[in-house]
Length: 433
Image: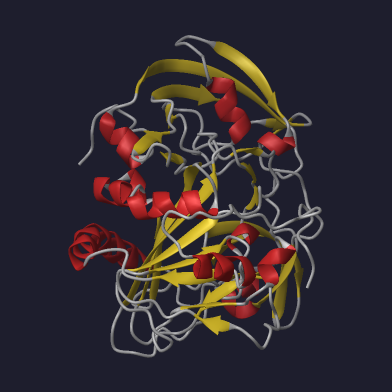
């Protein structure tokens, strides 16, 4: 068990009593074990209203999973387990739920007076889902400083040991963020969990409350019912995130966190969206490295590209260069690696079974292919091909490279309400339904 490289001199901190919502016993459980269950937070009517919004989202994601090869390396699979993030960006019901007084009181008790909604995600486990989510810390996916933020695991239906309730590994949260390694089912920090792991069964309407540093997992769903959960995470306002291979930025930077909604819990009810509400339409030539044009995943040339600022839809350095520009501007920009595709990291070589590569027979060192992870599709470079395994380089092919762009601003306009709700620009500026 090793510490994350950015975890330096960590010291656990927790607001003292008096508490607004939690009991002294729960405060002790959070400090010593890393989590507890807060019972009976939401009525069945509140849950039903929320599920009316989330169920169609889950159904659509499940439909899209039908097109994914069954042997792709991801825990998400059609009719088994579905993940979908950022419901707060498209659902007023989800957004209102995210600022519920329960979460504001929990924030005051366990973090401080003002927090930011850092992440929201629904996770539905359908009957017969055999896979177990790996042991991980939430801060192990993207490092946040300060390292302690709050995870609220809301049970929309009863979560039991048999259908995949959370489990935690007590005490390890006091070490700070651990080193995680990538597996086909997600990031893992504990190859051998301790013997004193604790199950947290959660009744519908109750919340499993734990730290971003608490190692946790969920088990398989061995029942005939769907286990439904909605997970919301709150970070202290002003927290800094360290995206993999990119510059550290504040968690309220609209260019980095797609769902950087602010929930100010003092006074209760204050809620602002971190968005710049502007759309740029622009053209650019392929970036140049050492005199050679590079091919990106993004469309380029031809029709202008429309970008909604503040939703992480383009590399940070490129978005920063577009701020404050006017129609007709033509300019060049050189983007350093940390603001483009990140610095190259030597520890990003991972070994995977050939079964995760439908095109394994044709793959050779240096070739690029795509694997499916919990965070979505990821382009990798083949490093070495063995008899039964393939070593892949998880660094972006342009990681560590300085990119030279030539850009032309075609138009600048205000974003429409639908674009803000969808989190991306519509090329013609019209509201799409």
